[in-house]
Figure 1: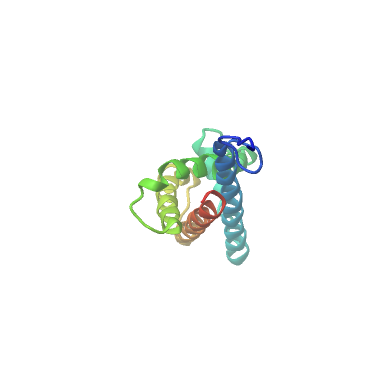
Figure 2: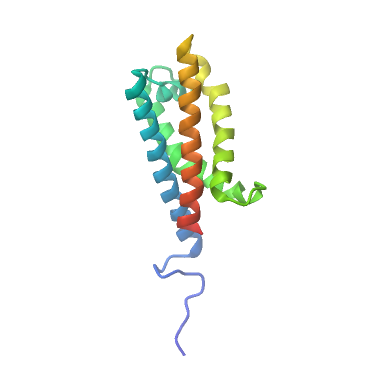
Length: 153
């Protein structure tokens, strides 16, 4: 009788590790999608959205753009996808992509309320900031849901 390795996938890793790696892969893809939206928005409007600056301001280290970018990437790849994996099944919507969008909309509102206050935007820049960060968060959430389903199942 062939020996079965309980709790392992084809890779030999425990299922929990395989699942976590799938969640992180979804986070990588989704963060890249969000960054592409920000780059396109900046190129089309010649307006710097200042997301890393807003995050640096929020964590109490203004003018530390590199720190803001590191926090943005780490949260997008690790923190938010793991939180999504933990709560997504409790979101009362059938489609996991829509669950991802709803999850990202909560992140967007939180980002606007907590992170953008220190940017001192005015006029048309406020509208551009709101619209493009909304589009980026919707793209992030949609791709997070789609790739979570693909990589984790």
